[in-house]
Amino acid sequence: MKKFLKIAIWSVLGVVVVLCGLMAGFIYKIKNGFPVSYETEAPNINIPSDKTTVLLFSKATGFRHGESIEAGKKVFAGLAIKNNWFVYDTEEGGVFNPDQLAQFDAVIFNNSTGRVLNDEQQQHLEDYVTNGGSLIGIHGAGDNSHHWDWYTDNLMGATFSHHSLDPHLQETKVILEAGADSLLAAGLATEFTHTDEWYVFFDNPRKKGFNILYRIDGESISPSGNMLWMTDKDFGMGKDHPVAWHKQIGDGRTFYTSMGHDATAWQQSAFVKMLENAVGR
Image (cartoon, rainbow, N blue to C red; front, side, top):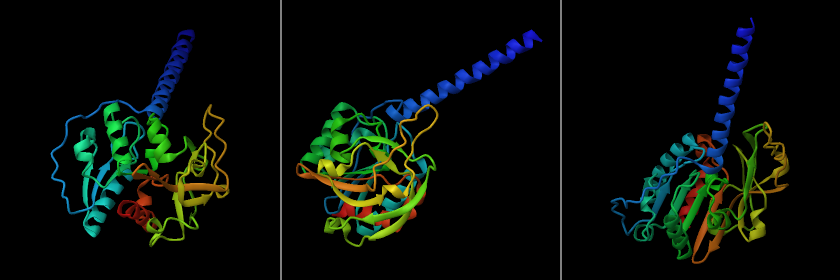
C-alpha cells in the first residue's frame, strides 16, 4: 500500500511539473516568441510600378492567430482584385531589405507576433517608414512580444498590458471618432457592433499624439485579464478606449487596430473597409 501511495504521489508530482513546464513555455512564447530564426535571402518578386503595392507579412513566432491570419490573406487577395493592387503575401523576412521595401506603398503586419525580424531588418523597416512608407498593424501586431522600442513607440504609442479574459470575446459598439481623418473615414460606418478580444494598453495613444479613428466605451466591457496567479490585470482603459489609430512618422505614417483576433472579424464589412482605407489613403 505504501509503495502504491509513493508511486501515486510521484506520478501526480510528475504531472504537475510537466503542466507547469508547459504553462511556462506557453507564457514565454506569448511574451517573447520562439523559435527565433531570420530569413535573410531576398526573394525574387516582380513588383509592378503602376499599382498600389502591398507587402502582407504574417510571420508569427509568438501566439499565432492562425484563423485570423488566413482569413486576412483571403480578404486582402480580394481587395487586390477589387482595387487593382499588387499584394505580396509572405512569412519570410528576407524582403525587408532597402531595395525591395522601397517598392511597396504599404507594409502590413497581419497578426505578426514575436521577434520576426533581425536588427538590420528592423532598421530597414524604420527607415522605410521615416522616408515615406506606410506601416499597418493588425491585432497581435500590437502585443508586447516584439521587444522593439521604435515599433512600440511609433505603431502603438502605448505598451500592451493584457486582453479581456472574463469573458474572453465580448460584443460592444465601435464608434467612429468625431473629426476623424477624412480619407481614412471615407465610407466608414459611424458605429457598428463588433465582437473581439479587446486589448488593454497601459496608456491611451492620444497622449502620444496619435489620431484616433475608432474607439469603444471601455466601461461597456469587462476588461479583466486576471488568470491563475496573475491578479494585477483587473483594469481597463476607461470610457475612452481607442481601438484604431494612426500617426505621421517622418515622411511616412503608421496605422494600428487592436481588432482582428479571429476569423469572424474579417466577415465584418466595417472592419475590412477600415483596412482598405488604411492601405489606399
